[in-house]
Image (cartoon, rainbow, N blue to C red; front, side, top):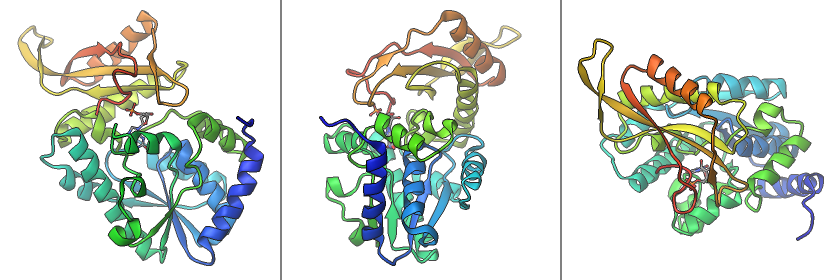
Length: 314
Ligand code: XMP
């Protein structure tokens, strides 16, 4: 295979985006991750003011995400409009237990909400940071990624009323990071660990409730903070279904939630190995979780590789 050249890629995709967007208005939804950030910067280089950047606060993003991404883009001279759509997502997911059903409900709500916001901005074109792994997994029937439509026979123009343009769809994560670096994005974005489109909705096993969402948000912030310096592809907590027996501070029995920690090494997300994290480090995360989230009584460590497990639990 030819060596990947990020500079050539950027030049080629700017031309591609100009042709695809023409004189129309386009819109891009940032998630805080490297894929959508690269897509947005390429889009702005291609069509400037004819692109709008938004952040959909769907309630399943990490704490402080809207502020973080707005700050990063402000430093690049790009304004990000934040839209709070949490209620719509919580309502859409209410009562759904099955992982694939949750993913589909999330996808549908995402595109409905996003097309409404696109309409308000006068945009008929959506730029999306879909990468090769997203398509491989969805087309291969592994998981319904929230951002893959055409490959599974959904026509976005017919179903939601807009055209989707995906400049990164032949790239793998490490190549996207090379492009991000070349574009001058800050390290906090270039090296950011992947975060799934449906966000914390798929890190709560089974039905999403506001209580569980609040627990996983706190746990995610703790893990991000405690394991910031660990070399890995991803490190995150998952809130398991059911409760386990535990003890309160006064030694009375309580049924607490269980959190699983998932820390993996991977090149391209297609395969992954669990990280043999130092025990002292694990103890530290456990202590922070147990101390700060009283509803949790157990922390488990996931030693599964992909395959047979996937990286995310749902
Ligand atoms: P799995 O769980 O399939 O995940 O081993 C592979 C990689 O993809 C991320 N992931 C997603 N990314 N939308 C995304 O943009 C999604 O719906 C989605 N589901 C999983 C996951 O975090 C891992 O990096």
